[in-house]
Length: 156
Image 1 (spheres, rainbow, N blue to C red):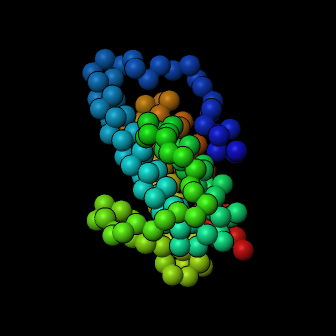
Image 2 (cartoon, helix red, strand yellow):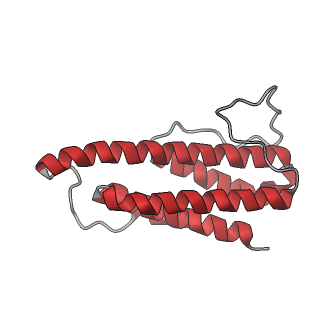
Image 3 (cartoon, rainbow, N blue to C red):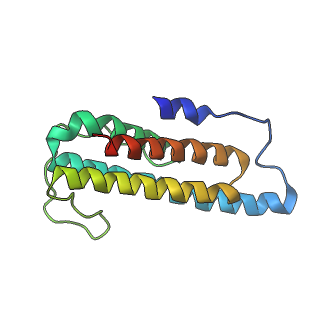
């Protein structure tokens, strides 16, 4: 919920589409940044789903975070996904494009998710410099939510 509230951000009324030649480079930068943010969110979503498949008893802890990551992916233009099934069926063979399987221990799985959340939040914060105003606000909000997720995942 906090992430959704942050997504609205504060608006200074600045139009990210203005700026002449700089506007043209902003569009390509914005497209590049948005595409990477969507890929990162989808990859993180895959990690949450693998964690839930390997450790279904973590659903109460991970489910809300997974759902928020799905909303982040959608905010960056990724196709919406349904909520994770209660008992997902294992995939017949791992795909090279899929993230690695969740670690065997639930504790290591949660640590890996926290590290992934921190890593992605850091990349999004780095992208703020090159992003147009509206995208920068979205990146900042989602990066803050990711940092919050990492904190929640490391809390006992």
